[in-house]
Length: 418
Image 1 (tube, rainbow, N blue to C red):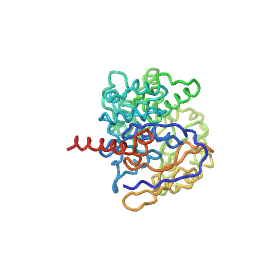
Image 2: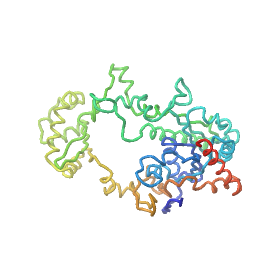
Image 3: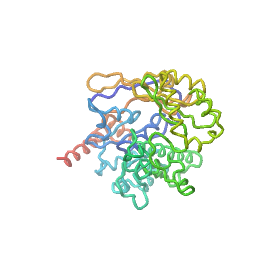
Image 4: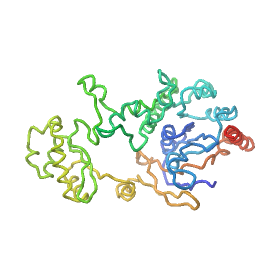
């Protein structure tokens, strides 16, 4: 396979240049965390299994050999093929880890230990190594050995109990929130230890331990305190958030939708005046969130009648002028053509091979924006093993040894699957 099209953009010194990250990840959580490092200049080495590599390469693709999801999460990474079930592959990881700042993995607890890659083994050779461990339930506790995907973590963490309509079964969000939130926390943890290393010269135990369910549980605000303090067990409430009124998606006259947040006292007053209901705007009783919650259906009806009488652009303009937070309910075509997305660099166009010839494909931009040190996409998710020889020779292998090492993994995989 030919490599993906790379893109070089002018940039200053990126904040993570000089940091090396070794990603032993599959699917989303660890790759999401490692991508953040790569976006801001770190050298991210992605270790992939020989038989097809990261399974994300095959997700949600309708043509070509590599999914756009992998191209997105694999951007700014170099791919090396190693079979971690072999002595040779494990030895190669240990050699790579000697010159690594952060290692990120998302295997089930105990897997690294079985491969001779336990934190204590790796840190014996590199005491300054930071090891980020993402798993379903964390490295300790009675459920540590359970298999854990984001779907189970979102249920166990309480998120899915709150997601959906009250009279229907729990539903999942449209993106893998359990994975991505854990990936964010994993990155934060690693950066904390890098800061400590810069200040004190050591990283302590040097391990970041995050369970997928813990990241998603942390998003649920006062779910548990409300239960203890008020005896409240929050239930599914569709698009509404209990106690946050008025807020929701409202239809517009041209068949579209807009989400409006008018749930502070001042915003509520402004919104009611826009809707032509000065009586509600001036009602002192409605200047508390609890009173508005008691009349939620009435207030939503008032807002819907107003938004339904006007096209989306007019509703948005009037809300903007009044300072009421609102946003249109966008799909992909709306996003890629919106001038604000484009002005902020949140949509990038890159040439990538989907099938035969390179095509212009739009991808999400880099977050957060650091003026003067802005991260960017240097290249998209690479082909499987695209950088194997390069990475292994950097680690001290000869070209012949590097080629043979990559071959060891492939032969082992073929033997296992035959």
